[in-house]
Length: 214
Image 1: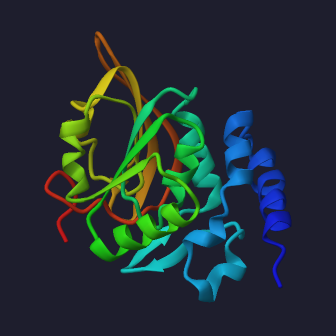
Image 2: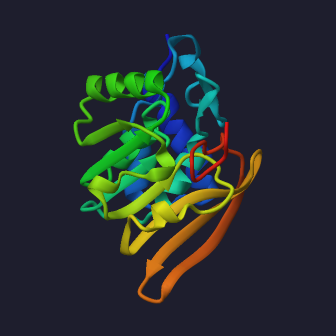
């Protein structure tokens, strides 16, 4: 039997704290959310390793450090409405739900969206709304958002998503080539968009009308 709680505590201390994740709310969320519950049963024993893992449909659940870093860059305080593009397993949405008022998450693959909904419901994450759609369009009906997290690599920052960010809002998105990107933080100001680059990363491609073509 795996002691998932102990592995989760070790993940936080070894993979996150030592790499500079310092927001206590983010660290607490990473301790609270049972990552293994969002993964296929056959690979749950590797849930707290320092790497991304496959979840089916050629998609992945991101490395714990990347989940924590992207979340920390959003600077959430608890009252925000957050848009996530690329629901995947639902794990990132659960982490966000620990830290904000409401999460709206968009997934283009129906089977992943259904699996994520089931996992979130089973664990009691009722403040997460899921839509199956082309995520590069965002979720216009629910805009504006205080923060947007894009969990897939884009060739450029989609203007469709920038338009759905409120003034003062933050977006975190991997931008670059199809198989190699850099994490970018964007802040929407009255004078325009301010961007700041973080670390190199590799995400599955952001597929859609305002992203990569399949």
